Amino acid sequence: MVYTPRSARHGALLVGTVTVLGLLTACGNGNGNGADSSPPVTVSGTAAPATDTSRSPVSAASADNDDATASTGAAPSSVTGTTAPSKRGPATAAAGSRCHTSELRASVGRNDPGAGQENFPVVLTNKSARTCTLRGYPGAAFVNGSGSQLGPDPRREAGSPVTVTLRPGQSAWAGLTFSNPGISGARTATPAALLVTPPDERDHLKVPWSGGQVPVSGNASSVRLTVLGPGTGP
Image (cartoon, rainbow, N blue to C red; front, side, top):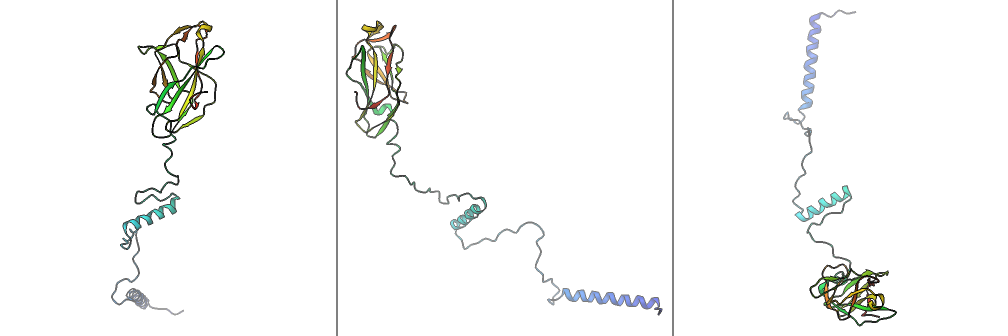
């Protein structure tokens, strides 16, 4: 074992430290000016995207919508605000909508009595310039000269409603029937008018009544209505 004096060991350690520092300095100054050439490291957050001036606002918005579609599966929203053209043909919904009271004219046809029954067709005619529809039962009420109702509302005969399409000038009818008061013995009154309300409407049409006495109370006094069908009567 060779003994090295303490002063010699301390000198060797100092030389080694200087050498290492020199090597580190040489590695850090590879560009010759002492600046670090490695790329900067982002410490936190995400850098904002650079503005792409090559795209117009519309194309940029479209691209954004495409990105949203890819990530969410939702269809892109319209950029211009226009909607795709309808695949349906010319507008027919309005032509097929129900007839309103203001588009109709009401009348009462001739009595067709039989087997102790009085049978009157209540007719609704399309007086408008468009095609419309009627379905179901009309409403009806007998009234006197002052407008007060005579007797209860008519009852509905069993039947299957159908949609009746009325072109301008075409008609639909429902049967208004009741037992002959002279046979049934019901108490009677002579109406001044019949109020007719089209299906699903609130306003009525007033038709002068010329059919004579009608039952308003007592035995067999019910007045009945059938569903509307095409035409003006049986």
